[in-house]
Image (tube, rainbow, N blue to C red; front, side):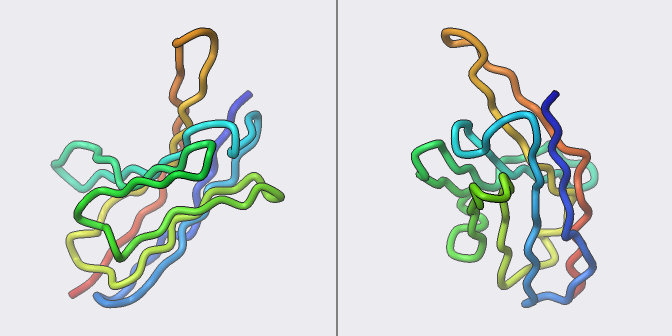
Length: 120
């Protein structure tokens, strides 16, 4: 059974930093596409960052240069380091795992989310 458990969300002032963690069980993070998404009130869920099995990372334009996604293979955990936070970064942040099942069939798993609130 695949489980993703996020932690690290908090209330922080603009300009501050937070590190989100996603503890994963049931799959190996280095063999799948891991990602962070966020959803603000009244808005659609949006992709923030991904890290692929080979280590390649991608970021939304809105967070480039401020956020960094990484993984710790020994802990099977994915992180999102968020610096220079802005009020518009306020959202529930979700960890995701895109798992290849068979052939080209994939399934995406989600964590329960962690709240990040940035005050101005």
